[in-house]
Length: 226
Image (cartoon, rainbow, N blue to C red; front, side):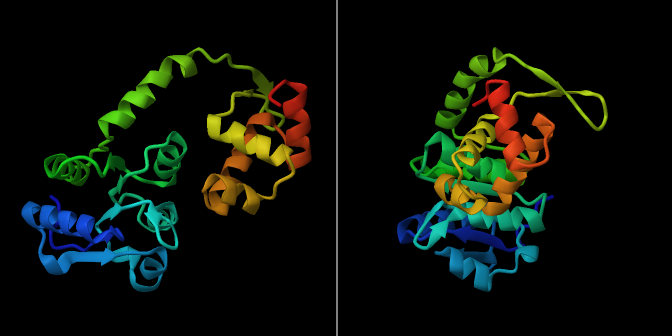
């Protein structure tokens, strides 16, 4: 059963949207003093005890940074916490970055109060609500991904086959590695944290059965990934 007394973190810098979310959460049954409204990354980092948060509603475009930074930090500390992105951003890269960072669901701000209420109730019940616009976009890409060929490489440690297929994000990062960018430069360019970029690079090493950047680029070029 959901504890409606537990703190809710709402990260939103627009006062009108803050009022909408306050009204929705009060209607759901939360007490006003359970709602923690923050308007910037810095404010969240300095004032919020992540371990006490039971639900997070997070916008992505903030005055001093990106909401994905908060999602990553929160999901590392509270792996099972429901995190719902409520944002106007609808580009594929941003959506996938948010979900990969640990967001449970993603809904567009343009939806009416009833749709936002349903999404919040859904995530509280353990669901993963995705905006219909985003869901249609993701579903439209599945056939193309399903047809992608798989190339197998030997695993030098376990003598088991490894798929050389990289995800779209891994291939993007591999290309940036090949162009000579550092991990931090890659993170800045594609709006991820350095930690997330390094995780993706480790996955690339594993799939290509290599141990460093130079070997990864060389191997990728040999098999036609670059």
